Length: 226
Image 1 (cartoon, rainbow, N blue to C red):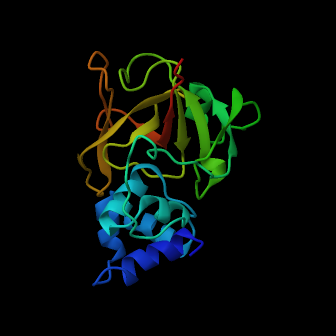
Image 2 (image 1 turned 90 degrees about the vertical axis):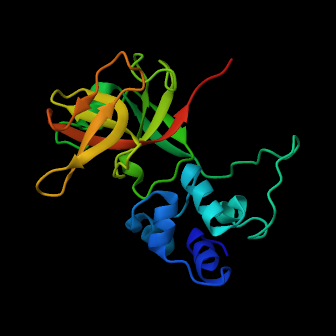
């Protein structure tokens, strides 16, 4: 089984005594059903990070097998001091590094994409590669988990889930990086939410009081250790 789609279908329909529905997998992983549909149809070629781990645990299969097809579906995964890492053989993709003003314009007619702050590479795989970019954290509003100088990868094609870390635009064209927290629904059934800093010394911003546009969802966090 060479594709994620084939492995998922095998884990959901052949291995278990009773077929597992896509909506059940979505609920277990914490994503919306269309995301599972993309995995099953082959539209999304990879699954990684927390989604991969939660899916493998729910389906009771080997995470390495689910991600790459290497090994057997139900191998026991043993973590010892000699086998707690594996090679990442995913292809690299070049993405732009933006500043927070460029990120605030991303996806609007005001963003030309011509002069990014720089370029970097990631193994993160998106259904829409042109919607992926990188930012360097500034300030202390998301400390201690995110510190100045840390890099993040953002996917603007993803919709935020409760607890997601997001890049958002609030009024001005400059972006902000915060945690997404749902607080209710408006009269049209749309989510009302707050942008929450991890550092309590900074203010929370509510969509009930401000016009906020979500630009993208953080999918990867990198930090240099020396």
